[in-house]
Image 1 (cartoon, rainbow, N blue to C red):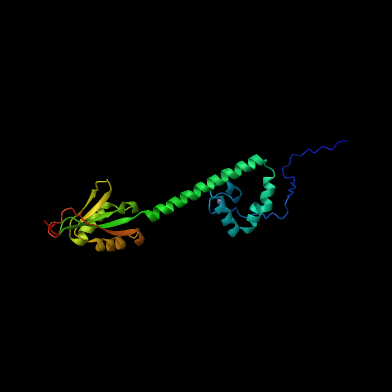
Image 2: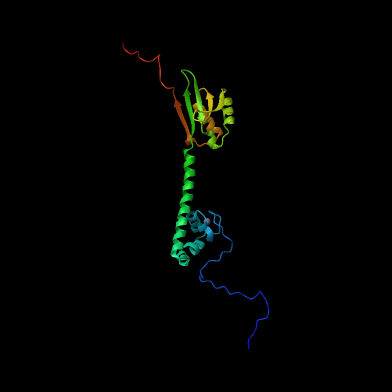
Length: 214
Ligand SMILES: [Zn+2]
């Protein structure tokens, strides 16, 4: 005789057997602070190395469960060799790209200079040229106005022959300009400010040139 199970209850207990009894049971959902995915999915993000480091530091048990050498070789053995190689290659590519991008941003930031140049227009007249403030999100017209007010002199925004934006302040106020930038535009690091000097080409310094002997 066959006993039939008639009732359609959903409350029948479901036995869950875990292959790995030591697996920690997460009480609260953990999200990776690097890529924001749940740690199981970090490998699909582009910063897997950084993710793993974060996980190892802040969720060591979960890290062991997911990414210890044992866990990884167990997971990898279910994939074909080709699939594993492909995954590893893609992963390396993604990581290299993300690293390169981060490096480029860093490098660009440290390379971006604000130059303050003292320019001798003729024997007595100097101007001060300031370039690069716009890279720090500074409005050049407002900055020119600020310099004009501070030094009670003329200041304007123009373009150099090479098409670079610059603020031209009348007079030799290079050092004062640097002080004002450091005081008013804190977003410009002091290390990124360069003071230079531009003397006119010495083509005919008649007054001082020694007379060629006749
Ligand atoms: Zn992650």
